[in-house]
Amino acid sequence: MARVMLIEDDHSLRESLRLSLGRNGHDVEVARTGEEGLRRMSAAPADIVVLDLMLPGLDGFEVCRRIRAGGPTPIVMLTARGDDLDVVSGLEAGADDYVVKPVRPRVLEARIRAVLRRGGPVAAAASASAGPETHGDLTIDRGALTVAKAGVPIALPPMELRLLLELSAAYNQVFSRQQLLESVWELDFLGDSRLVDACVQRLRAKIEDVPAKPRYIQTVRGFGYRFGPL
Image (tube, rainbow, N blue to C red; front, side):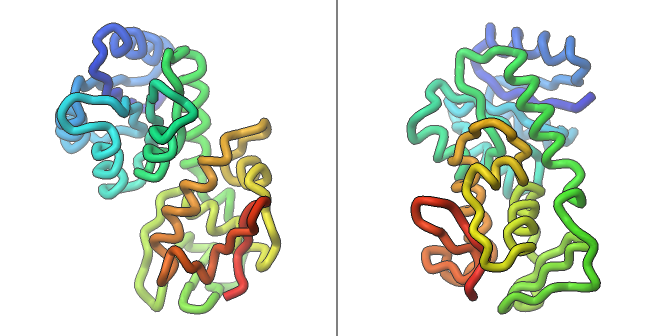
């Protein structure tokens, strides 16, 4: 059972999802606005947030950014369209996954379970290591699951950490987006490559000196990504 914060302004959808998630054993807290959701989370942190992007007042993008700035709480966003700028902007703001409206409760439940599973045991993405690895200014300790740049610790949410561990474990090896979806996101079907691209962009913003000219995570045009050359 997970504690779910559901932030949705549509009354009918909010109640429908609250009931369906409750039947699946979750403890569901609801909020009608982004401001209300943030207040409730401040009082009692959630295990995962289900967040509508189109909210009155403080919109879902800003709510997502504020939640992500405060910690690694997983976020599944709800969007009315699945093939436009909303999805990309939501992922770049820090969402872990998305579900397109009209929402099917079974689909949302599956996404929630998948995101919680992926974000939980990060150690599964790490391998035994004799000690910290140094790559340029970047230090990765797989045993302690820590990352530092020029000696300064970097706090990474679970998915960004898993992605960095996966790429850096095979220096200069090229990974396709689908390979990363399978190994990092644990999606063994044709997943959405935008999940990978948005996570790479967020990770670069934290570990690269100049994200637009990356030293660590290189783009292999038309295929995917690799770690290095530095």
